[in-house]
Length: 151
Image 1 (cartoon, one colour):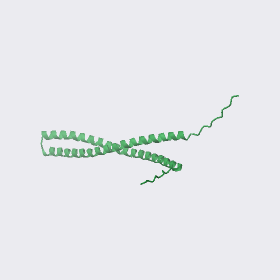
Image 2 (cartoon, helix red, strand yellow):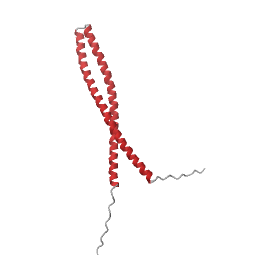
Image 3 (tube, helix red, strand yellow):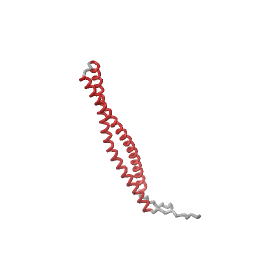
Image 4 (spheres, helix red, strand yellow):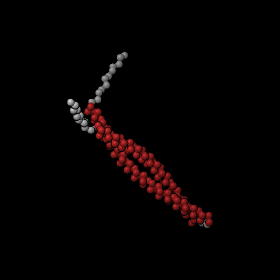
């Protein structure tokens, strides 16, 4: 069986120019969107960092309180001291649970922020390189002077 050879369709100058222009526009839009996302995620990252620090300080103070309360229980094991120790342990467990949640969120946000920054750097570099190439390509042609013929 003979197979038909189909002629490849030639692209026109206007359609190729349109494709290049739309690619440049989409690159600029993507760079703007990435920058906007970076600022939003940076805010989230900062708030997660502050809450992480807050929880860490709280956990440290509760650990000290627990140490003091357990020493009081060893010294004098009455119901009041035991109740105080249980309350501190319960609060400490809640803080640890919340801290693990914040930690997982923080690591996810950090990974996303890192990838967005990488993409943003690449897009900015491409945009800058294209702008420089456009400057070179759009320079007006220099007029050539006629040479004077020596007599």
